[in-house]
Image (cartoon, rainbow, N blue to C red; front, side, top):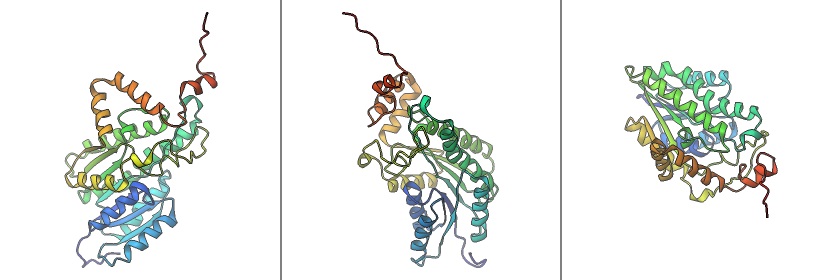
Length: 293
């Protein structure tokens, strides 16, 4: 814990910190001189990162707290833990998230609930218990969202719904706090090379295990982390990352029906797309037309 006589070191809490964008954000904020509090279900993973960072001998420190953000009690404990170790909370990065991939008519509703519990309610719980402290420090709440929060993606109904909900929640928090000094940043990358697709849930709740997309062509977590940090430092309200993402959001403002078609075609090209015509015919959702000679 920081000494009362030590220089003020800002503190960033990062959920989903054991891999992907969350892990990259941990390194970025630590290198920038922040204390970092790592939260994730993967306790071994965050403990390993914490030990690695603290060996560097810097005045700022890393701390880890096993956390399942879908559980309100875990989120409260995370904030309490951060305050017990550090003098303030200056940045809360709601990064923890899971995805899903299946045709909605084939999806167990428990899958959508699980995605909402992590992506949306995890953001709500952590923000609720941290917000008074963030207002005190005139800090920043960051939501790591997605282009799926601007445009619904076929085959990812639960994921898109959770990101739309995150946007509405964080926008409301931003407007409520126009006079308090609290900043709110919504970061929306396009496809990023992380494990989110391999860990995505199928319609029955099983794990997808393989990515349906070419990961080598995607943004890196480190690039996204750098852009998020830069956006925070410039007091941005939104950042949209990637040419495809920016184009999608812009076109959707003026030509939403066209974007419906383009998004359908793009997502339908994925390997094993759950809404390809032949799949829908096989499952009886579409009847084949008889051809008359």
